[in-house]
Length: 363
Ligand SMILES: Cc1ncc(COP(=O)(O)O)c(C=O)c1O
Image (cartoon, rainbow, N blue to C red; front, side, top):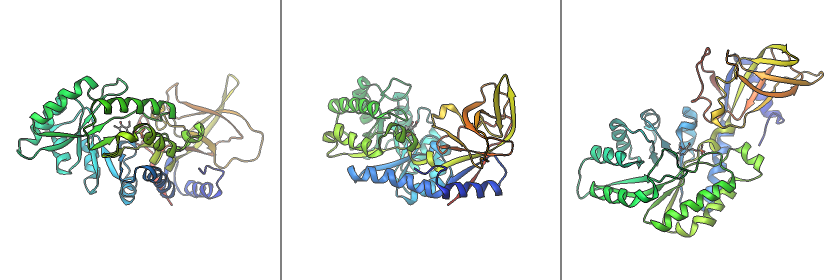
């Protein structure tokens, strides 16, 4: 993984910084392509027939969606807005979400997306919108709750959900599970054990959709694991139950995290109670902690001089708008690069006091 120590990337950012007002996002087409190819390679080496559906909420930028399609992947969508974003792509699509509406279900049907039912009320809704077309039935997915949050059927509801589907002309052929996000290999293994328990109780599916959860490049580097190890673990734990089934994956952050950086500028350097602060023109408004990203901060054009500890703070009047502490020789007007902002940062940014930074595309 190339960071600022790569001269090519550093020069690209310097050129962008000289031509655009900060703060702005930089979307690297090369990094995007590399992340997608590396996921595709890891999956294909073990599950050549698997379907990969990019989780659109992670980064719905048109260039990201176009690259997904160019790589032959499909889409996982969760709302009318996301359905609208992918309507021009003919691809394998999965429509998830705990808050579906009639309009969304009609559009999902129109786009031939796999609708994943999350509850009995979802089942009623989809059956009603689909209507009755005997002897034709609609292939659907059932989401199974793993991890106890608000999503999916519990294991003991599964048999009843199946029976009600059949009564209403729905054909449950896809089992959907999702482990959470940025999962350690150990936790991912525990999730797979849960999947095995489900499949041993009810294995009558054509598709097993494992959801997302794969760590991004920085988290993998920290844990010294690879995507291939995650895919091998699936084969190791669940492979014996997958022989006549198609695996589906819904990666989000591992496809895009590394593809974007945020460029901001130091507007003020000040001291308070012996602490040095560099106030940047973007902060918590754009770099949400809830994204669970591993943000990395560097001064792009650091001049020679004595380095010292400095707290990087954002521009808002929020007391918690403090980002991190770095050791640097930092001055007003210096550019600071924040790496790993490709997942959720654009969609989860606040417009508190400042507009959303624009996105500049580079090769
Ligand atoms: C249903 C579903 N699929 C896929 C994803 C993408 O997960 P990740 O970004 O961890 O790959 C999410 C994210 O929360 C999700 O809720």
